[in-house]
Length: 181
Image (tube, rainbow, N blue to C red):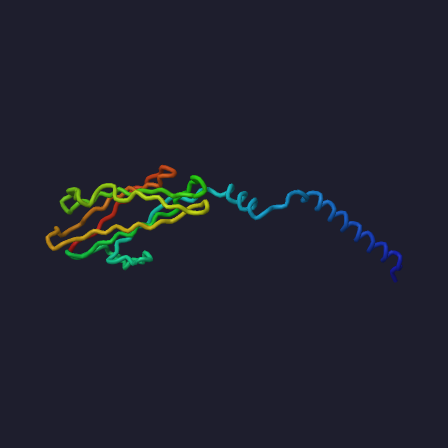
């Protein structure tokens, strides 16, 4: 049978060791209290900047909420409206005064089936700036509308776009096409 003094002594040693560990842990962590902002900043410092990118869809219609009636095969009939939905991803905001701004532009060239530039629908068509109350990366939707008519040539129309995040100076070139049948 165990001696009651030995059991009591064992419990006392265990309590003392626990207290010493608690004191050491407290010593190492005092003054290192992390606020949610400092945690966010330290995590953000470890992460790379998100990549500026785009998605492009050809649509028969785009509603006010940027929902696209997709033309998955990009084939339209003469006289159809051709809508292009461009989703810019991860535009970087920059501060000016007490607001944050994203600034972007779109240039576009459209070529007919004979590879001739259609000047009336080509050029710089978007040059925008949007403001926000906080810093970050933002997504922006752009709608382009092209009207076709019954006299347009049948075949593939090339759409070459240059989309720019003006805050960081990065340009993405995107080439695609739609067909009139």
